[in-house]
Amino acid sequence: MSAQDTSLIHTAVREHYAGHARAGSSCCSPSDGAACCDNQLYSIDLLEGLPADVTGFTLGCGNPLDAAALQPGETVLDLGSGGGLDCFLAARQVGPAGRVLGVDMTPEMLARARAAAARLKFAQVEFRQGYLERLPVAANSVDAVISNCVINLAPDKSLVFREIARVLKPGGRVAVSDIVIAGEMPAALRDNPEAWSECLAGAIDWRDYARGLEQAGLVDVRVQPKSGTQPPAHEPYSALITARKAALDTAVIAPAAAEDQPAISELLQANALPTEDLATADVKFFVAKLGGRVVGVAGRQAAGAFGLLRSVAVAPEWRGRGLAAQLVQEVEAEAAARGVRQLYLLTTTAEAYFVERGYTRMERAGAPAEIQATAEFAGLCPDTGVCLTKAL
Ligand SMILES: C[S@@+](CC[C@H](N)C(=O)[O-])C[C@H]1O[C@@H](n2cnc3c(N)ncnc32)[C@H](O)[C@@H]1O
Image (tube, rainbow, N blue to C red; front, side):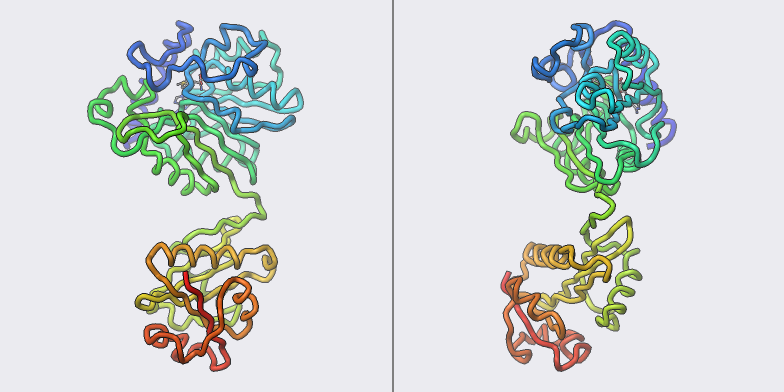
């Protein structure tokens, strides 16, 4: 999407919501019963004590607050805060010692929200003008990011996802209500300029939404339909999206990327594990990363219908945290998903470790020919290496 397209969408969306703010109307469009308009998003208990002009002005499509599980003293950021209802609900949960920031690009919305905050004496709530794609918020400063029916309106969602990951503290969490779709957006909606502002045309496939958050570095990403059941394909629907930014000392386990290769080789060499055949062997690696650094690795070498589990190594300072076990589990799950029914490995030091994880000892010479043909079996691993196997 070009900068011009982005600017056109921002302008159209801003004008649309400026109109809502001026009119005090809380429905995305008269024709839109499905997506943005929902007057029963919150329980009566949650809304109790707030005036009707505040509780009645919602342009959301769900209730992100329950999933956010806010605690007293926390800092919360609401993306696209609109009239401010979610910020005020959050403020009551984080209490006077907490802090709530609402970011919105529409001056008329900000004016409405700021006037309500002043009237209701929410001193811990602040509304800032800005774009989701370039948040006016410091890095690593927020315990929870919430948002209600806004990210679908952003032309470049990957920028928004990266901004969320940037502003969250390590261990911080995401709870977002938004419109998504399963499959392609029908052309009638996609090509209708009004439908973008009405929270429809900008909705993306829920799997792309999840992938976008993961690519931004977030973990434990879940996208659940608000209704509880998966709606039919090609129909926009409201979903609750949750995710987490890994804590500083929590490793993220993921398939290795091309740029991880030098760090993998270094870790294997430091652990006296073979790397000579890596350029030619067909090995699928998984890595454990902490703050972007590779601290653990395990791999599966393809060998016909079988798999060779190899290269299980964890940096000394990160041992004893179960990383090797998680990496082995990932390798086993990936192998099983690819139809591999039997894994083999050679080890000189970790027989007991693998036996505890369901591997059994066997004669090295009894491994199938495809496994015998791997460089590890053919000589890279010393004769003292014990052969173990596990059915998947
Ligand atoms: C559908 S309304 C939702 C408002 C509020 N979250 C609620 O639940 O009532 C969308 C809001 O997001 C704001 N918005 C949309 N796109 C934005 C962007 N890219 N950056 C900042 N604000 C945006 C609009 O100005 C509007 O106030």
